[in-house]
Amino acid sequence: MSHQLSRSLTIFRGTGILLNIVIGAGLLSLPGLAIQEVGDNAFYAWLLCAAAALPLVGVFILLARLYPNAGGIAFYAQRAFGPFGRRSTAYLMLGAVIFGLPSIALTGGHYLASVFPGDPNFYALVLMGLSGLPHLFRGEGVGRILGWMASGVLVSIIAFLLIGIGSIDFVHTSFNLPAFDLAKALLPFPMIFFAFTGWEIGAGLGEEFINAKRNFPIAMVLSFFIVTALYLAIAYISSLADLSGHYESPFIVFVRPIFGDYGAIGVALVATLIILANLSGALWGVSRLIYSLGRDGVLSQWFSKTYYDHPLRALVATLLSLVAVLLIDKMGLLDLKLMLRLAGQNFLILYGAAALALFCVAENLVIRVVAMSVIAIVGLLLFLQGAFLLYPISLVLLAALLEFKAAQKLGYIENISI
Image 1: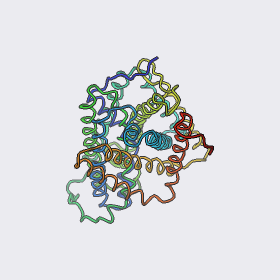
Image 2 (image 1 turned 60 degrees about the vertical axis):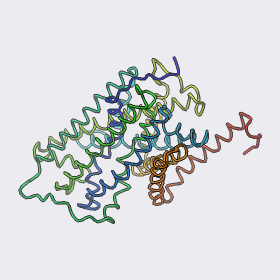
Image 3 (image 1 turned 30 degrees about the vertical axis):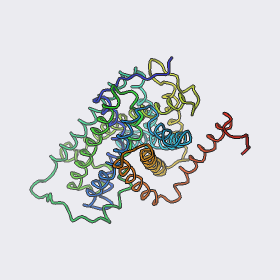
Image 4 (image 1 turned 30 degrees about the horizontal axis):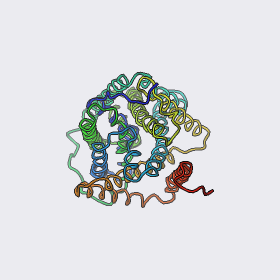
């Protein structure tokens, strides 16, 4: 056992893992749902989200160059705001993934249950378990497997795009974009923005890159532009198709004219591949965060032990926590939409926290302006959340209480009972 991570990620493997983390369940349904809500202006909504996400991802690219660390955003917050910043952002991140990843698994479960007999929660549990299998290999082996999975996801999505193009009636289809309506384009913005989250989890990969200060930012940039190109292409082709009755599964509409009803089974299987890759990539990032928190004393040092340069303890703890949430959902005590809402909200706050950290540590005026623009975007979006903000507020208050207790224990604060 040791306390070190292997530096085994190349640009290719790192980009693959980031793609696995970002491309997930949202890609399978959001293009159609956006069209259902605002019609032809949905494509403009995707453009707006991509434009808004660019400076957000830019914040992580800039921070990654400065501080490639397994703690990711929690480490950035510590550099800017001290121990409380690290603990509060770590809790916000864990509070996001504890609901977000089970939601992704449930999406895959519903896809499988739509074409095979069985319960969606059962399929979700199977998917969660399978997503952990690649992590049984050593660090370099995991990176290689996730890189292959990312390649499979990209090939599958591109195949769907080509099938979608092949199903278009070029003679009777108008390819002119509609008049831009800002009010309509903004309506599905919060929903679509969920598809542009994931880089805040991927920020914890920096410590495992070869030549991290050079290769990690390159992988971040490549993953962003690949993701954006795929999203915009799918959104545009979806706008040309007749999705009536299938807004939640546009890929089925692409496939059915050519392959018939059997295409639905293919869509479900490919959706399973995408979600497995998404879950495996996210497990990599989250387990590294828990490992770093244990290593630095924010969580129990038990989580900081590695086996063959791999944080298996942190990984197993993450998996068991996610399985527990799926079981609670099976009992009817949780709601999928609520889980997605809470997870997306926390991820948005984390973007803002990273931007604020960058503003505090950066000395360049241009970088500070970028950071302030991100803070403004996040603030505007959070204004619309209402009572749902009680969840992240409670996590921050918990972090404050535990940090106070930790300071008392170390003798930094007089022993005042709370």
